[in-house]
Image (cartoon, rainbow, N blue to C red; front, side, top):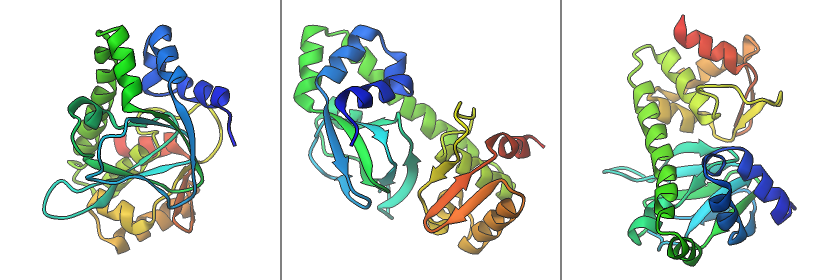
Length: 231
């Protein structure tokens, strides 16, 4: 299991905290607790009471929503460096999204009282917590824009890249990017039939761009997939 020190280093290299001042980052990490979850374990559910922020250190998270007549359903897959929970911290209202560990997962948890302590010491810290909300707004706008792509293959590829956190750039390491979702989940997110999703994935696998396994898609060639969107 990862230590508090190692966990803090990981979330400081990527995502929201990386873009905040060192003093604020230190104040957040000092108040965080390390928590471990097994595959399939719920972190929190839609409608739960506010419970602070969660930062993903290791593993994966399925993000579920229920915004209208249907749901809840999985709408996103989160990779290490992602943080969630700011909405309920701001409003002190029930959670609007749910998080579930898709594999053994390590999280840092900043309780609500930890947020309050930071803001009490520095009221301007709200602006830095607000950056997390803007990150999620950017993610939502990017996802909405991808769903406007008329070509169903390109739309599917764009969604897959977003799920792997490589829609814009490829991570520095050479490891396969594993997205812990089944074909049906990704098909729903890309607004294509499950059979269509399966056919696209098999073609991408045959071309050496992805690997397929049970409830997991490994992205091997994100640069090539992004080029497909431009061609």
